[in-house]
Image (cartoon, rainbow, N blue to C red; front, side):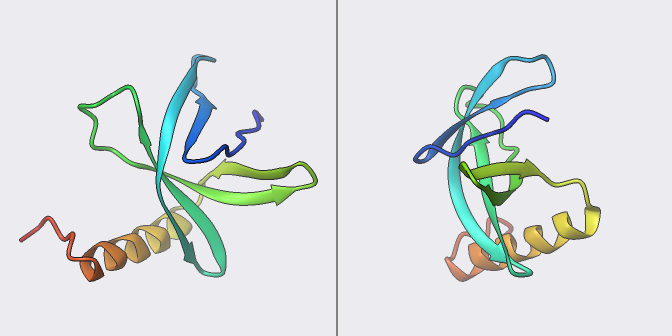
Length: 93
């Protein structure tokens, strides 16, 4: 598994084609006692799709781990939506 290290608000991840892609960390949040990062691609300005990664730590520091569990993903999305609504950023109105 490729290690994805966190550096400021921009991270570079390796995609399925082995190419490096830059993402901006737009938000970090806590859900179920774990920390998560919401990422948006920097180069694809037309994409409105955000990516969710769990922030884990090892002896070298923090790293991003993709979510593989549907329940974990749903819990993080629920927390994210609650934060957006609380901040008045509910786009459904």
